[in-house]
Image (cartoon, rainbow over all chains, first blue to last red; front, top):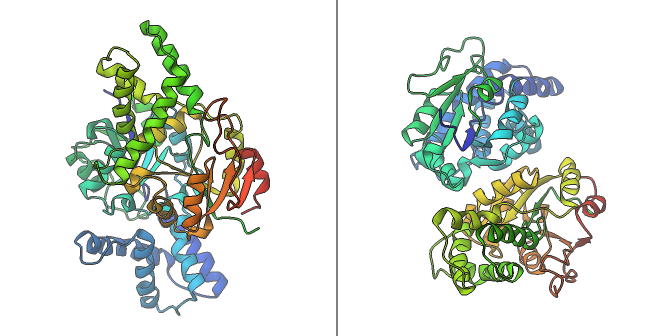
Length: 236
Length: 236
């Protein structure tokens, strides 16, 4: 197996456990304000709202809006639909920026550190740059470079994101590998000529998860976690 | 003094000693090929060629070309003008990529590490992304984020670079501080509303350096090196 020249990582779900992290933060926030709700259901709905709002940007129905802006807009709708009283601006910002403070899965710090010794490692995420900066600092992760949908003003799975990252790294698509827990992301990257590695995150969407439990056949490599990926990849 | 929310650093000259690093690499390369030249004079001429070639991009006389491309074009002209025989493509690439392998000044690793504990730290350099990725890995530096002229398709001192970095960080210009060894860079950043810190690098251009020996009056803060900067800046 020919080693790739660089690895880029999907972030939400692949590296960080957004569901548990946001539910914990919402629960603590709710408790401090005397608010009650099914916070797991809230975070599931919040995450689900990201796809249609992003699709509206991708289809050009609304102008470019970064992920913080999309999270803020869907937060307001959801907050109302859960029957909660509207928040003062600073508390709303505090909630929206819960997406900047997510915990990594337990293998991520050690696995990434091993991979970074041998490969250039970057993110490739729909999260905006400021979100990613806060997130990697909060999670104690060390990347050589961050790539964001915001750099390209296109959201994954648009080809411009995968090809844009390869171009900025000075690499041919086939020299770059995307690491992700989502078959759709990996299939889009493969269509652009990138190499692909699947990491199983069977609890990303909670105990009832049905999707992305196993890699689709077209994906080159599958690993249990980032430590296993470091073991499976040859030396660069 | 109100602390800034993030610091961005100029790279060439401010963090790394390009002149000594390139001259050493050229001398070793020349020796291995039996070539002789005044390599310090070569590197000075190579660095000097960067300004007019970048100005041609800035004025729109030529389309966007990243710094690797500008270094490659000026290398060919210079190599000929020094009476040296043209190189095979892989050796030419090896020479152009000497700019990816530069040594940091002795204070940089320790000073940056101290600053990164308290502040978001990024680069803001005319070096292209791939160049910066290699450079920070080679030099063992740890940034939260890299900002490049290539992201904005504008070279410093265009306002779009300073304001682009602030926007991607989600900050107002006055919340971001540029750290640089060059008065021109800092003056342009100040015109955009950024805060400014001058680091003296009196040997960047060799023993005869006449420029940028001291900060101009408009600059907010001056420090001997990055460790002194960490001491001078308040906690964020």
